[in-house]
Length: 169
Image (cartoon, rainbow, N blue to C red; front, side, top):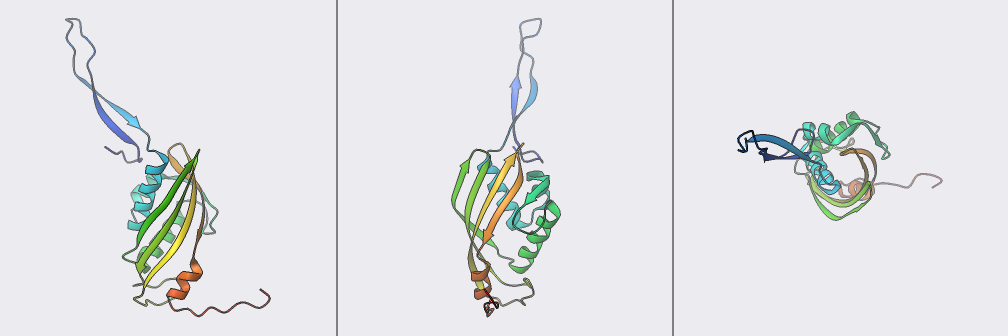
């Protein structure tokens, strides 16, 4: 079973002997922390379904985001809302998911149909597919830090944007 904070728990029967030698039933809850892999998978599910309550349980209050959207849950939730508004059928495939110590990295292939405004681009009804690489740091059973890159150029081209190089680059 899962608690609101994302941790698993199991109900256990603890029967210490009473004065007559019988074991009285007493229920206790044993908490089992999510593995880093389970934490990231639940986060990605919550991200792609815009599940705010689960995000609150999995992401630390002082979440640091090095991907340029701002720190904390607020900017993250705004990004998620913008993505789910623009791509109502957003889906992802994980390949691979790598864990080392308190860090976990994932490469995602994201697909969706552009049915709402996205970064100033009117809906095109085109199906898009692009790659994302994310790295998270986990502490105390929550995501606390993030680095990420996504193929925004490939996405823009699929949406029909003609991009020209800037002067001097």
